[in-house]
Amino acid sequence: MTVTPLLVDVGTALEEATGIVQYALVFLFAAIPVVEILVVVPVAVGLGLNPVTTAIVAFAGNVGSVYALILGYRRLLEWWQSRTESDGPSDRYARARRLWDRYGLPGVSLAGPVMTGVHIAALVALLAGSRGRLVAVWMTAGIAVWTVVLTVASVAGFSALGIV
Image 1: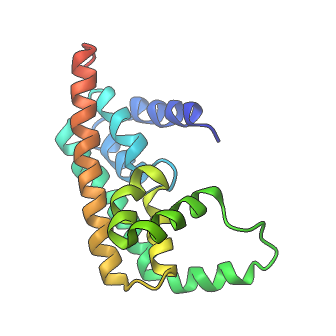
Image 2 (image 1 turned 45 degrees about the vertical axis):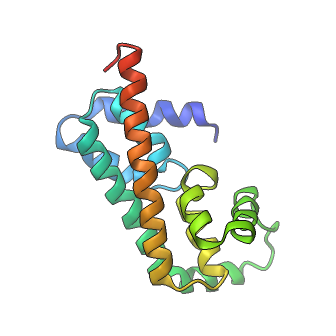
């Protein structure tokens, strides 16, 4: 799936919804790997949703899905290992693993949202042996930083273009 159709799909869904349903969709889209805050925050702000509410709801959706991953990663690991006929690690996993090898948990957590996605970054940290609680703390910090950056950049960019 390429980014452009994904942006259109997210934008169309948000545009067709109204009121609280729009923010429920922001929450859901932020929780979905690949979409996450990197896509949903700029799209929602560009469509005129309240930037602060969008940021809070997107943050909650993204963090909530990461917490669910942390809580269920042992089962996920067992499932993954049962797939012995895999093609090897994905490019996103390999990129996250290189970040891990170089920068450890803080680096993966802070770079993960834009480099690999938070779900892959959290999974790499867990597979590398980090405690779930530490992964949760660092991933929350990384998601918070990027949510603020994306929201501010989106508001500034769309304001400069006269869209918001």
